[in-house]
Structures are given as structure tokens and as C-alpha cells.
Image (tube, rainbow, N blue to C red; front, side, top):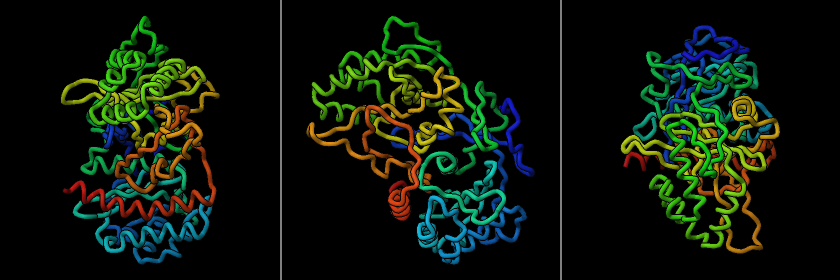
Length: 434
């Protein structure tokens, strides 16, 4: 069992079991549970949500019960009052409550509270709602002390909100309990890093390296994915789009070749030249079987990453997720939750290495005078939906760290997306059933 090298600041929560959540990583149009683990304190419930308030004793349990009672009764004004006011306004909080109350109006009686996960100063309550013949996990963040306002949601996907979405997605993918690693298996991991401000710990294997992947004469690290990645970088450096496209999975390869063809010969050549000139100094290979996350530094000290997937049918490696970003990507980009405490110390970076993102080509524009398109709201993974999402908005050649913002327009956009997202989730499930 992996145990943090230092006792967590909050200690293990009373009456809870220490378990290992299998973190989901985006692989093309879906996500898979991996051997990258998040060690957390978990309490089991399995209690119908309408009876939950009869069995609780902890402050956060009572607070969660109050919130559910208000939402199931359609009392959005009361539920909105439980929400922390910053960065939401009172109107935003009531709109958020209305979205939940209306979207699940007919299903509260069949919902079940499944788990409580302690995250230090707050608890994450996982609950399931039957929808179109399937159980859909949801999660609410509640202040551990239960003192109002106790309902914690944020318009951004950084920090605790991003951590919540990752846990909720794991619950969706492992609805049959496979979200948690088998305790009888080997849970030892080389790297243990505490999630700041929580009692949770990242547990993972990997290889710290210092390797220029564009240098064909450099010694290739002793890692299962390293030779493949060296070949992929050589194919990119060659300037042959077909050769590089063959390194991707079928889905990502098709998307890449469509992009390269639309770019045209000159612009694709400029992309290759720019990529090679920026360099690719690989500093860490993170094992998240069946995925490998390749982290590398550019010449201007940006820390980027690519995802390699080992196809279980062919046992071959593939580059994946071209122009596709998952919920865990929000954590990978986060300065305070992942970059500073996890990646920078083991990658040889420093405090100035605070720009992290998935590698992506430059945006397509039709004319030289057009401004780069402003990032769309859907690029921020919607915090309440564990169903995997795909975004086709191109990232720039120079990705930046997530910017935390509390501006009113962004809050309004995300509240609107919450309502739209609930509808989209229903359509997604219907499509899956078909």
C-alpha cells in the first residue's frame, strides 16, 4: 500500500477506509481507468438519498442532507443560500440550484448516496441518479465543518473543482466498483505526492530522464514507451505528415492528417520547423497503464506533455487524443495541484516552469490578418458532468497555465453551460444505449 512519506496534515478521517482510486486518462474519444492512483479516505453509504438525513451525524452529512432536501423539494432559493457566495453571486447560486432541481425533478426518490471522500477541509459526496436505464454518478463538495454556506462549487476547473471532476469521472467509468484498485494487488508506487490542502496522495510510477527526443544520436531511456516515442519524434522531424500520422491511433491519425492537409505544405513545414526549434527535452515518463504521459521541456522552459496509449489488442503504442482533452487534463495544467507539488520537483524544472499543456498545433485561420480565436467556454471541462467530453477547439502552439478568474461573464456562461450540459448528458446516454 502506498503511504505518503509524511503524515498528511489532516490525518486519516475517523470511520473511513484508505483506498486507491484509479485515475481516468483521456484516450481519444473516451477515458480509461489507469494505474495512476489517488489515495483517499472513503466511507461507504449505499443509502437512498431521501432517507439519508435519518442516518447522519457528521456536520458535513447534515449539510449535504439539507442541500438534497432543498433541491428535491424544488426550493432553489433555499439551496442557493447554502452556496458559498464567492465567486458566485446569489443569483448565480440560485440558478445553479434551479438547474439541479429541474433536471432531476423526477428522479430524486430513486437516487442513492454511495460514498463520502474526505478531502481535508471539505468532503466530496458521491451519489447516483438513475437516468434512461443507467446509474449516473454526481458529486457535491461540502465544507467538512458543515457551517453555512457549505455548498462549494466553482466556475473554474482548477484546484479542488478539477479534482472533483476527476473523481466523479472515475465513479462513472467504474460504476461496478472497479474505480478503486483491488486492495489485494500490488499498490506500491515509486512516487508519492500529497495533494496540497487535502489528505489525498498521488501514487504513481515513472522514470525521470533528461533526453532530447529530436536527437537521433541520443541514448534512448530504458522505458517501454521510449523507443516508440523516439520513432514518433523522428517521423515528425522528417516533415512527412503521412509518416507522423501513422504514429497515432486510427482516430487521432485521421484527425491529424485532416488538419495537416488543411494546413497545406508550407504551413505544415513551418509547424515542423517550429516544433524542432523549440526542442523536446523529455524530463519524465509517467506510467499510467495503459497510458504513458510524456512530459518535456521546450527551449523557452514550458512544460508540455503528450499521451501514449498501449493498445491491449495489438500490444503496440500509439499517440492519442489529438485535439481532444479530458477532465484529468485540467489537473495536469494546474499550477498548485499538480505542476508545483508533483511535476516540477521530479522534472528538473524550477518555479518559472509554470506553463503546462497538451501539445497541439497552431490554430487554423483563413487569413493572416485574423486574430487568434479566443478560447471557448467548452474548453473548460464542465464541472458537473463525468461523461467524457470532446473539444475540437485548437490550442495554440504556446499553451499557458489555467488562469483563475471570477469575472461575472464567465460565471454566467458556466451556469448556462450547466443547464445545457444536463440536457447533453441525457442525449449522450441515449446515444450510448443505441
